[in-house]
Length: 307
Image (cartoon, rainbow, N blue to C red):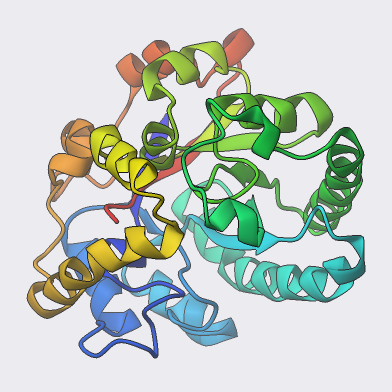
């Protein structure tokens, strides 16, 4: 069974907007909208946005929502900065621990630490290019360092009862399909496949799901326009140029913020996310994307993120 969730970023609320832009909705308002739309869970957003500790648990339980996971970037290529970043990961897991009893009572899987690699300046300056320009990628030595530090992070998560997933992210050293495959080759991470980032960086979500079926256990469903990304590449744009194009959209979303009926960006979720259908069997989707390998039920919450 696949459980379908939403996320604060669908309303323009995430690390680059909360406390920065005006009109970003508050956490409780987003929780209400996600509940009213019939989703079963929600992603964490910035730590504290939905509350901390008992307040987080109460905010979730009072609305019948589980916690999907939470996103964090870690500097796997930089061992010197890993200790401080692991402290941040520990804070993220504390939020998961607070929400764990709620998920259990709702019959939902535990939240997933959703980890990406922290970007480097040269990759932020050249997003979307690594699919054709492999020289932009890590050296063999950097990949070795990456793998060691990734396992450190994975071990911390597992020691506290949570299974991490790796998130592909535009403008980092894991954006192109071949880089995602390198993560799967070198580490024990399963994958949180972000369809929008994959499209923007030259990948095909359906082909990738079929190819990586045994390692994709979490999905962020988004849309993207590869042609627009190619325009940005052709003019030498960087990651900040991508976000600049979204500023007006974020402002509009945060001011209007209707209940999140599935949008064009997440239209395939419509059969499972309609109001009043809080959980639904996804046998067809499970078959299509092989999220239940070897006859074993693998349950995942997929976050519908439209930014």
